[in-house]
Length: 121
Image (cartoon, rainbow, N blue to C red):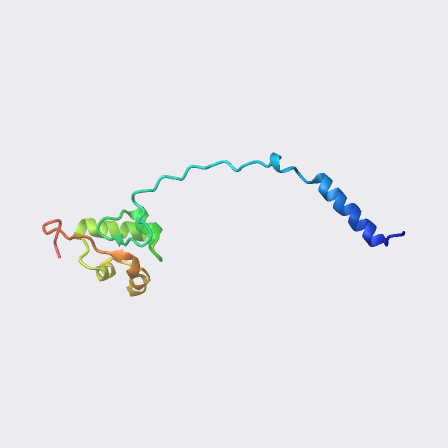
């Protein structure tokens, strides 16, 4: 009985594939990597960013349209004029407009405002 050439080729390819397949006992397990510790300054998913407590690097990292220099300007404004009373007070910081406030409004909050802390407004 003569077999067609394509059948002979497929049989030989199958035999070679089986011969070169690694036995299941030689598979290497992936190493277990420990999870990185959480950074305290970074807010968790769903948590709002407090304008009165966040540092400049956190503000720059978490807010859209805010780089390092604008984040420093927010912190400097807060240090000089006291805590923000509302999210809209961000417009008082030079270079921050309504568009930037609206881009970030959902992820921002204003923490407790304590009277007497540089309250010059």
